[in-house]
Amino acid sequence: MPIFFQQQINDTTRLGIWKIEEPEAFFEHNVPVKQQVTHPHKRLQHFAGRFLLPYLYPAFPYRLIQIADTKKPFLANEEYHFSISHCGDYAAAIVSKTARVGIDIEIPTPKIEKIAHKFLNDNEKTSFGMTDNRQLTLLWSAKESVFKWYGDGQVDFSDHILLGKNELSESLIHCHFTKTAIELQIHYHHFEDIVLTWVMS
Ligand SMILES: CC(C)(COP(=O)(O)OP(=O)(O)OC[C@H]1O[C@@H](n2cnc3c(N)ncnc32)[C@H](O)[C@@H]1OP(=O)(O)O)[C@@H](O)C(=O)NCCC(=O)NCCS
Image 1 (cartoon, rainbow, N blue to C red):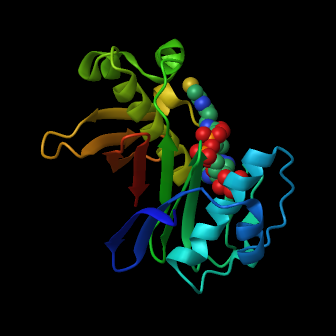
Image 2 (tube, rainbow, N blue to C red; image 1 turned 30 degrees about the horizontal axis):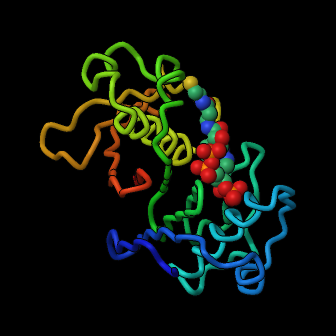
């Protein structure tokens, strides 16, 4: 299957999710990448993520991608801001000509219950509840998106990323990011197999 989901967020920002059903050669042919990834499925995911960048913006100069010390990929001239995520047979990317962005996709599993107490603070545990795997995965994904949007690492998920319910919209989560004292709105979407979150500011 080619594109699984695509969204034109605004005039300068696009998002896509690819369901990976192609062999590695398909992606390799389209986006030869420099990074060495030894695990075959992780390499396929990596290729698919890179492939999405020029898929969303055909002029995207993926050959100019650099990797920061924090492992965040970036373009030195900031012509485009972008973020990538992959899980299972899916890869997702968000690309913006104007705003910093972060994206994450996750497959909900019961394993999330074991780590929820580490990434959620007491207020979040009270307001969102701790019972539903899908909900816990959504909150984890939301924090991963903020982590990638920030990009500089050294983020404590429980202390620096404070999530709250958005009273005006059920498809948004409110976030106060204490490291830069900024308010963010995290967008999310539940698909059958995966949860998508993204943030832009
Ligand atoms: C780096 C990290 C965000 C990757 O997340 P993941 O779930 O393993 O993988 P994803 O597929 O969603 O994302 C991987 C992509 O994120 C991007 N990425 C990696 N490091 C990044 C960073 N520091 N900032 C932004 N983006 C980053 C890359 O594009 C990478 O894909 P690529 O190497 O194929 O290009 C994650 O491993 C991490 O470190 N999270 C923070 C952990 C933490 O502090 N937890 C505290 C819990 S209490």
